[in-house]
Image (tube, rainbow, N blue to C red; front, side, top):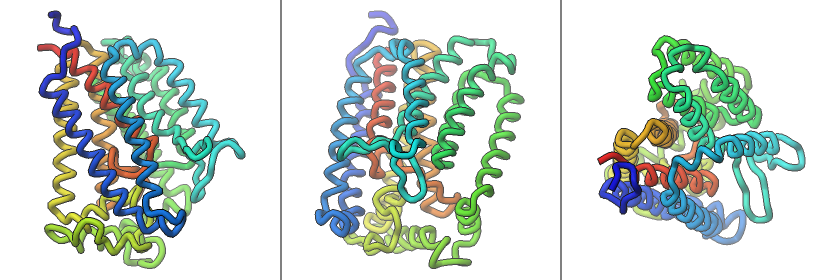
Length: 370
């Protein structure tokens, strides 16, 4: 058997699959608990959000299995179409009458009972596109112009379309994916540092360019300055985490989900985990994510070629950054961005494409160097 021939599932594959499925199962349980009150109030059924997430989990599992069985190198053929479709869908959500607006943001496309968030597809498309591009350029990325074109214009276009929705949190994740992959590809430190400086200044400018973003920054610095308005969600999230203690108040026994904490089953589901399952529950989820990231990094390191290394590293960085941002926001360590917790927060689009990314990791692992 050659070093890159597909093999049966090895230990790393089984562990990665088990970790992803465990996190998804925990997410389903916590979504049922966290969303039951709001679902009953809005739809007359406590299972509304749970049932939709089960459908997303089933679709994600199928996507993960398919992605794991296909040679990841074949993805090269679909780089351009995937990126063009992703950008086209980002444009579509901004068109009145096509994109659906919720809470002042236009991020969704609707088809009957189903909603689709194109920015979740863009994350996966961006990983594959950047990996393909940097693999083709090879050592030429030491030259700034070779590194920058067409990578930076494409990244800037994607980020501009996402911020137009507006969705600063997802824009930060997408930019972070590109920076991480440039580092993995061996770009020069001075180039990465210069781009990082420009990126941080841009994020700071965007954070203060709109009133609601400024309020999020100020409420992060001092949530108690306006505890009933701008600081409300931050305070309620920390109350939920703190009231859980070591073992929590019990699964399904959350008090904060009774309309006290906004977005209890989406952006702030980690707070409900802390309240119901306590420090033991939150640390267990944190350890599961760390183990998933360890497995992803190990798979990337043992990839048979640079393309596999970059895709594996990109998917791992994407999941890691998103999980870190979400948990840090709930804990009050960074401003609230609205980024979901991968595999756990409610959201079918996020779940399906995250599981697809994990399926690609499994495909890389099947062809890993011995």
